[in-house]
Image 1 (spheres, rainbow, N blue to C red):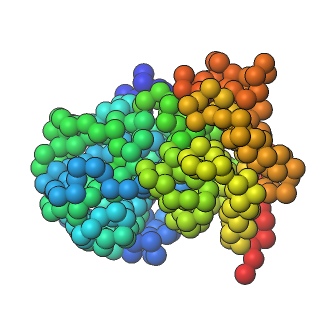
Image 2: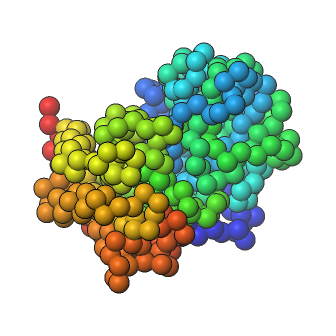
Length: 442
């Protein structure tokens, strides 16, 4: 996404004004996590203010990250006695928000005694914009205990979140839950502080940095700026592993920019939030070390479980080819993709699929593996797998050597795109292909 570094001072002032007005409009009831909180807003944080009925709207996803494992080195102490301040980036805005915290890979209950949400004062900054900090509650309580393997959804908080902006999600845990559930390839710097500083707005205590997102796996917004969510389900090419750090230039980011710009211009395009559920190393069929559970195993968690999902864009299959010690079976990969589609259709979700991009010159390349890629792409292009197809292969391949990436679209490793390559992938998606629905099946 395009960064707007010069506009954050103005943004902070505007947000503070909106918050002042919103405080007069919203006086929210702290909603039960994931149930009553679906359509109500908790009041802006004030130490002794009572909660009252609040506004309604539709929940959509504005940001997400798939948890992939336990953070190395945190097995014993976790983040006990420290505050983690994650920086995440919105695709669409809303009048209120809720956060999902995960203890999927923890070995003990995760006790969160303090959690807050705020708009960042500037790009990549741990400081909060004036008037935007909100204390998060869970079922009306400020403390939540998340069991091993579980997650918790906060009550709705009345805080206007602008589209295309950084948001701070701060979590304090006094005790260790074992390995910290995390997403390793964030391409975004987050922060940490010794002690409990969730309500700090200056950012000064946050002297530690992290290249990971910890605990937080989703940020949803409530309002009328979007009608639904599009989920990008993929591997490292969706995860944006080679994109510029802190710049939001993954292809799902650029897709969010395109949707927002087109809608603002009055085009007849879907008004969707975009969430990125890419995992580097992910496969359709097999779980992988560092690659998380297979696409088949994580569909419920990372797609069907997201808020307001209307469409999923699937870009998976390259790692089934590259990480298979034996030659991958193209028919099995295609069958796996068809299964993903069938399960999405059962929930009324439209499925757009992509062809697999070239990797000629990569250390894992072989003529036999290239033949498997071509077989999978032929099946996808034939139209018998997805509701619509985006030809990522044709977009990025070198016209003089179709087995390889075009040089300017190559990050340098002959597999992952450059920032320009990621932009081209997003631009290859016809926004009209995101429209429409399928009837849910029983």
